[in-house]
Image (cartoon, rainbow, N blue to C red; front, side, top):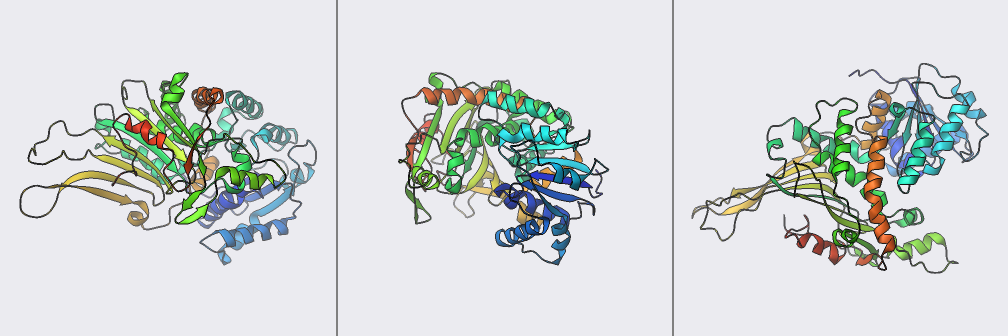
Length: 496
């Protein structure tokens, strides 16, 4: 793979928004520092903010200085000079002249259209870019989630974008797939002989995938109320992680092999329909509680604040927590449950994949009161990305064998001794390389919606809304009951 810097025009539609300021521009800044952007590369923000180029540079400079642990210095002058701003109302069909004049006709630079705007605008922005002659066969478009609200809207968006770009030009981004731990999952499985022989129903008891957030919906409550945890997290992030855990070894890591195997997993997921929606899913909504000893308000109170004081108090049924149980119906995973859990205002911030191995078939230590705890592999996505393997070890000392749980702990930051790039850094460079491996294909997106939609429909028909749980806890008690019915426990709810 070439290390030459990329000549690119990166056009960020929604370039003054939260995503651009918190994630995209810091990521591009670090890649610029690493020498991966050629001198003639430009970053062009498109928004309705009415800023000129200098005004936008001042805004970005202030945002980066205020939100980063790595303050701006003299090395960032080159990055700031790359920034431009064009005012366009993406909901309309005119006012593209300023962007056309700035870009000029397509040249040697790769053009990336990054849609950090509402998904309802994806089609019109792509059509506008095409109509104004801004695209060529090398152009690429990046689609941020949520890609639709249900299967029909996802198909409509895919169709609108697909009318302008070929599938090879479309990069549907899921930033979880750019995390170091997620990529290391592929390496652990397929570059080491230790795990793969046990990576099946004979060796694994169950798998847990959890994404817990201590923050609430906050200022995003208005948006979040139209989405909810199932659409916001399960349909994309957690199902993608499940696919990487469960997929068959691809023959290669070429453009489509990994995505082909992920699609097979999505199509093998046991459907959750009818009465199974009640049996195998739990939804919750946080109420007032405390995080780290500090009182916090409930979700509905946050939503009322975003809507202003004049409206009636909300009775929202939007879920801020989901736990569910499913299986992958194929030879490798027959009978192995996969438990997925995500929520806001939880007792901790943690994203992790837990692979629980089966216990030893026979204990040769009959003098012990209990059997050795089964081995457990924990992949931490955040915080402190790394891998921990839980083992049974002998407690040092005389007087016979006493077993004690111990862990082999691989912290990426400690082991590799340097800053870990943010997921967006890796994914943005993959867009410039034209490498779609860590991006979602159209059939993946639509297969995930096909699996999620019956759950949404079942909840919609239910007389019961989300179960309340106090902020600062691990979720509704029924989520604990969901896994304990199978004789298992959520990782983190017991002593490691």
